[in-house]
Structures are given as C-alpha cells and as structure tokens.
Amino acid sequence: MIQIKTTIDYKIMVLTQCDILPRKFREKKNKPQLFDGLGEDAFEFLLQNSVLQNYESGRLLVQQGDIPTHVYFIVEGALKTLRTDEEGHETTIRMLEAGDTCMDAVIFMGGSSPIAVQVVKNSRLLLIPDTIVKSLVLKDAQFANNLLRIVTRHYKNALHQIDAMNAKTPLQRVGYYFLSRHLENGHDRLEFELPFKKSMIANYLGMTPETFSRTLKQMKSMGIDVEDDKIQMRDAYTLCHFCDSDTAAICSRHNKDDCPQCPIHRH
Picture 1 (cartoon, helix red, strand yellow):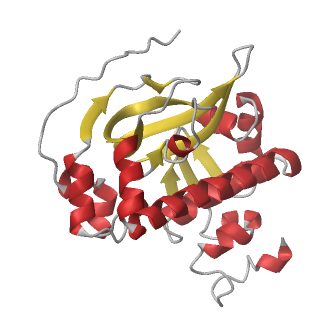
Picture 2 (picture 1 turned 180 degrees about the vertical axis):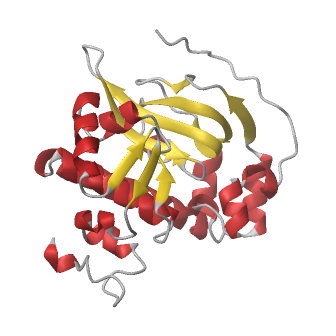
C-alpha cells in the first residue's frame, strides 16, 4: 500500500525561467508547449504564483477520487497517470517526461479526479495552482491556446491507444511505440533508451510483461535488438514497417526520396 503524504513542504524561492525549463529544452533553445510563445508578463505571473518541489520515486501525488488542486509541470524526472479498478488492477493511462504537464485537463472537468498520478523517477515538479491556471486562461489567449493544444494531444493519443488495444497486434503496438520514440530522438540515431520500465510500457500498451518479452524477441529478427533498456536498430528505417499517419506527420523523411521504405499508402 502506497502511503500518501497529505502535506507538501514547499520551498519558498524566487523562480526564474532557467529554474523550470528542462535541460533538453534549454539545449535546443525552445520551450515546452505550456510556455510556448508566452509573453514575459504571463510567464512571470505563473512563476510568482507557483512552487518548485522535489519528489521521490513512488510518491502518489493525486489519488483517484481526489479533488485536483494543481497542474504539475515536469522539470526533471517522470510521472505516470493510472486508473485502478475495484479489484485493484492498475491500468497505465499516460507516461510523462520532462516538459510534460499533468492534470491540465482534469482541473477543468469539475469534481473528483478520474485518475491517480504517481512519481516513477525522482522528480522536480512545478506546481501551478488550479486557480492560477484558470485565471491566466481568461487573461492570456496564448496560454489558453497552449492548454488547448496540450489537451487535444491527450485526446488524440487516447484515441490511438484505444485503437491499438482493439485493432493492433502486440507487435504493431510495440513497433509503433518504438517508432515514436525513435523519431523523437532523431531519425539518424540507431539507438535510444526506453524512458520507463518495461513492465510499465507493457501495461500502457495493454499487454502482460510476458507478451511484451515475447514481442521483443520477435522484433529481433527484424533487426531491432533490446538490451536492458537500450534499443539498437540495424538501420534508420528498420521501424518504418510500423509507420502510420501520426508518425508520418512527425517524420522529416516521410515521402522523401531518401525514405522509400515507408510511404504511408502501404499501411
């Protein structure tokens, strides 16, 4: 049984943009979607009314049925959202990394949260009170648009997840997940690391750890080797078998002369 700490030991500090922007975004000199295009006044309003807090892996931030009070922005670490049925079986809904936000849609639903939120790696989080988020939505069109884009992406991912559960084989589900990770890490890289434990990824993809392991062995014959948490590919096009309209939209080589193996009409 996970113990829930009901109080938060806030650290009072003056926050700057450098404090809350994840390293990968600072290196690329861009901003996470929540802050994309925000003016200085709006950014300062968020910083002045939010707190930065560290949490250890395993901490339950929100329990299913709680009334949400904050939006969580991940500066470092990782979270997951989940639902638990009456028999105690957990289903992973989302797996979140640095730059992602959590509870952004739930605070606008009204009532209790349909999901729980748990820390899966030691994390540094920016806690933005729901009242501040709702206030800024009314004052700043860019911030409102950013939130709408984030929630829309959640909706799109949820539809894809439902489709995968009902229509795709375990191999197709794992292949799609790996391809998405590959594109996020850069098309020319032949290896990347899984950001979450295999058991969590399996749960997210709607399969048992045993089925996930068998699927990884099946993928080895395709030139995709998994050693611990590292994925190594024979070439940059190995995962193109699993390309669909969503991955094609973020692939810089889709329908280009140097990527003849993954035209979308084959899938």
